[in-house]
Length: 412
Image (tube, rainbow, N blue to C red):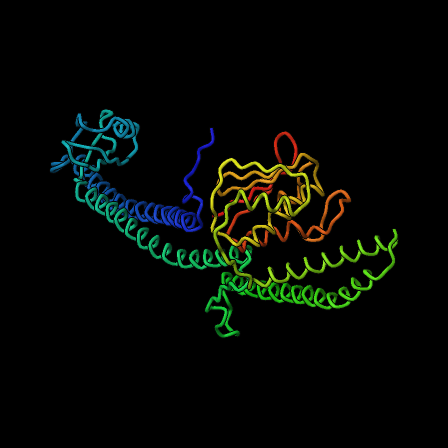
């Protein structure tokens, strides 16, 4: 079974703090072990040398028949068995063991009659020294780890705070705010000094945003200029088409001129929406009556269903534009029956065709892109989405489970 970690466990600051803590613990443990082993070996070596020196003196006294002295015994019952076996075998050795509740350094060697001559040296002071050293190692390691973690967390938090600020700016840019910049002060420092990686990322993001903004503004200006330049000759062309004699060729010319004028007006409207200067002028409007008016103006067979009527504070002209484009798109690219449903502040337009294409569901409507050779320029839904944003409404595109495209406009 896979454990689900809390969200904070995946942050860079927590990972860095954990890494620093683990590395500090490992380093402290390694240094502590090295110091402990070194001091213990030195302390035990000194006690062993003392015990063996006394054992040598006691052995000489024992062999000469002199008194063997205090702390020296022959085959004492407290002697550790491994050391006894070593002495009986004719070897000398030492061993630390508890004797009467205190640590004792034993030294033993052979005596006559397969007996062991032993010397005991009090090892309590050395044992306390090693225990005190171990406690000092533990406390100093804990203090060093704590200070290192705090200092490391402080610097890592500063870095992650800058990364979060950069990420927020990137999200604002992806949301359409092309004026957003990181403006990291480290990117404006001395150019001869090396910059850290976060400053490099921030500078690259600001440069990308500036380049993207310049290109989009150039595109918007180009679209607006083309639409404005086409408007004048189209007006004259429309007037000339009205003077043509009746007939099928004249109808075709007038139809194409009308389509070209519609495209030009749509391009002008998109350029105004792209500029971000469009503002809503709200007034009170019953949604049911507005929906009826939109359907009548469209001249289509669209069923209007009012489940719950409300009076909305909205820009009537823009809302009519949004609903009109949704109804026109449903009839042009879908199949009937088409319905427009009002349920409080939620207005839904649905058809029973093949539904919206996958790219539109994933990325929203894209201008001048249609699916499967469908007629149109892909501007209707783009304008509807832009006008909905001006209204402060949310426009969502989905496909019904039983087939058909569903556009849902939620007014605020």
